[in-house]
Length: 64
Image: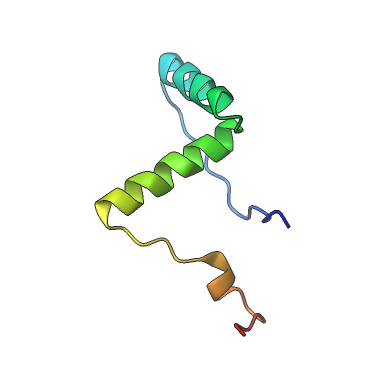
């Protein structure tokens, strides 16, 4: 089942960067939002920055 997004990120970038992200997303059959998220996750992984799994911190959920 698809995960529901719970946060919004608004940012201003140069039009050329926006177009590059749009083209990159299209090549991978992704939405621009998904492409940006994937790039952020990749950067964090390469930089040693942990991203906590949302399912692990959701209230009322148990593992097991």
